[in-house]
Amino acid sequence: MSGIGTGYDLSSTTYSPDGKIFQTEYAQKAVDNSGTVLGLRCKDGVVLACEKLVLSKLLVEGSNRRVHNIDRHVGVAAAGLAPDGRMVANRACEEAASYKRVYGEPISGHVLAERIGSYVHMFNLYWSLRPYGATMLMAVYDKNGPALYGIDPSGSSLRYYGTAVGKARQAAKNEIEKLKLSEMSAREAVMEAVRILHKVHDEDGKKFELEVSWICDESGKEHRRVPAELLDEAERRAKAAMEESDMWVVAGRGGS
Amino acid sequence: MLPRPTSHSKALGPGVAGPELAVATSAVLDRPPQSCAHLPLTGAQPCVVDPAVLADPRQHTKYPYVTGTSVLAIKYRDGVLIGCDTLGAYGSTKRYKSTQRIYRVNSKCVVAAGGEVSDFQYISNLLDELATDDFRTDDGIELTPQEVYSYLCRVMYNRRNKFDPLWNSLVVGGVEKGGQSFLGMVGMIGTHYTDSHVTTGFANQLARPLFRERQSDDMSEEDAMHLMYDSLKVCYYRDKVSINKFQVAKVTGEGVSISEPFALDMRWDYKLFAAPTKWAVGAW
Image (cartoon, rainbow over all chains, first blue to last red; front, side):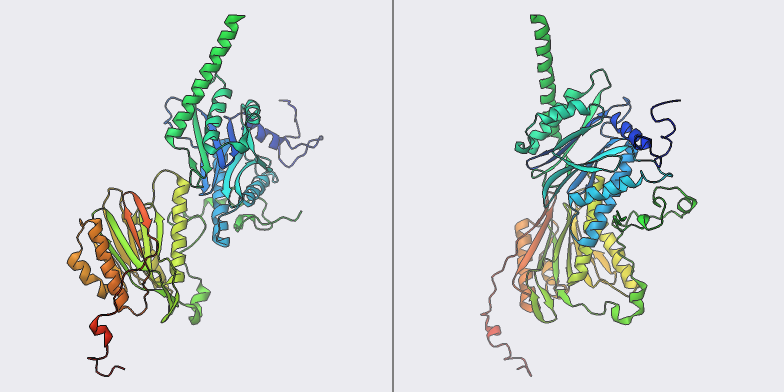
């Protein structure tokens, strides 16, 4: 089977002639083929939203959690391979717990992001391990305020105002760029996140479920899933917005 | 770039070609299953005492240093009330007058302690770690008061067996899932019991008679508060190492509320107080 990286893509300890490590790139592809996950850092908090494709009617709603609480003030949403995401989230839990035990205070966002980045990066160094096929979007609210970090399979951890990963990341990122995040409250950000996910969802595909979490002043600076009524309200508004835009499209076609 | 250790985990020790955690070698697979559901994620080991400490007789806990005095707790109609003063005494010296001896575990449960304040801080940290593990699981299930009580019994008894006790008398109070109240006491050697009213320290002698007379499981909140205030007053009058600054925690089905410190009206103009040594032979 000949592909782009033939011969140089068998192990993560081999560089290709143009300086790439293909195993890491392939891990990125695993993330790019999964459901969209987006994060928004707004004025008083951070919102994480996951689009979970419903694989079967037999699956109980609410199972297959992709959003994890790491500590009271930190949460992650995992995009990509779900079990890999869970492994990294477990590691983040241990790092946060151990930091608290040693230093007596909750771990800061930049420290945890760096630790998780180093951990994920380690799996790109050794021949006996494969890189994690998961990108973690980490929402944290510590004494420096709210922050959103993204740690990808290569181990780089970057800090964002807003970002999206997964299938529809490009369309989602375009939508996010239009938002004025620094003036938005967390409540409004939840509405926007749900609206964007509905908009960029591939209509021909399967049905999808949303998992939205937030950490903000309203949630007591604790990371938790948004209250059910807020999520329902956001979904209603998103569906209404979709129908409205559909109507415009139809009207446009009819008119011309 | 020098490799920096990123955590206190053995897995990233030097010379390891890959972390111990991820590789399923025979060393990992053939390990006997270690049950650690009762241990918090941080690796804290509440019942383990460093053997070096035990060998040196100067390093067992032999005496408490900064201590809290009595804790009083009663059940009433809506839940439980737990009251104590806010003193951390250094022997007879009333040294720290703003210690909070009541610790909120979660929305259903509260632990209060008399005895060594530093050991209670350690116990509070353990409970905080367990509660955070519950928060992480995010399934709506929290530790119930009965579970906290059983856990603390085991911790206290195990430490006693290692001759290095946590020098506390603990009161665990809260509301169970079905709505029934729970009140239990755990002592520093592992003695434990549950009852409708529970006290530690001097309150056993001073407040218990009042509770036996006036407490009932379906008393109203007003009656319960009056009973609590009266008992706190008696403890302040008769316990040398106590101050007129109390906190009362109320745990009901709606949650936990720990009051701000308050003072009670005390009277020192009783005739017998005016001439206390009048009938006491040999007093000065």
